[in-house]
Image 1 (cartoon, rainbow over the protein chains, first blue to last red):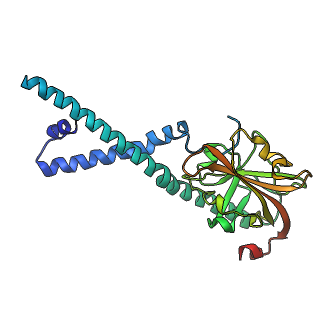
Image 2 (cartoon, rainbow over the protein chains, first blue to last red; image 1 turned 90 degrees about the vertical axis):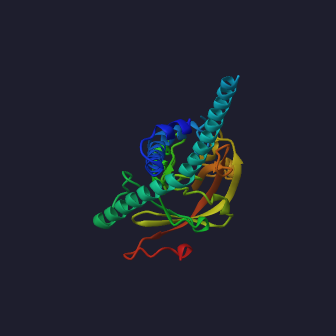
Image 3 (spheres, rainbow over the protein chains, first blue to last red; image 1 turned 180 degrees about the horizontal axis):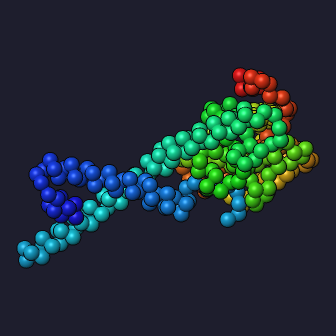
Length: 53
Length: 225
């Protein structure tokens, strides 16, 4: 999977490494900005009130 | 034969990469929950606290204003500075790194009320983690609530380290579970426990000891010095 992505990136090894880094940062950004805030209330880690629900 | 074997090897390696990806995802989620939400919440709480203080300074003494925050909670035993207190205990409020007073399922009494229970909730971990050190509170410790015109000094008289989230009676105006039978001016802190999960709720009860007028320099009461 990651090997396949690596082979399909353009340029030499340095260019590919650079593009990979940008891709990783983009994924982390999307996770922190959109995915985790969405997932968090669905997970049972941070309910602090007594509410009977 | 060789091609079939390489196909199996390929499938296994994709499976392995998926497992690694899953592990990294979970690791990132931990980083998000325990670090990044704190960064965001502290920044937001700072901003809101400043705006409340600015408004206090601008308007001088007057009626209690519940719009952006009613005051600041100081709990020396928790060593977390001042915590802005706002109305409501929904995620939208609490995720900004503040404490909220209950409006549901039991409406909290505000400190100024002659009788009642000022019931608060805040996060134990992440989103500012304002009640992270709630377990450090012991009987006799002070909880000070600062409003524009008054310091309310409460003393802890009972802690309940573990109770069910269905136990809404802890918020009652007269919290019987804390051993009180008569109406008084109480404060209740609630958060989740054990740390990093929310299987149970941690409760701390205090009772108002005295109030002090805020002076021009906002000199804190002896408990905070």
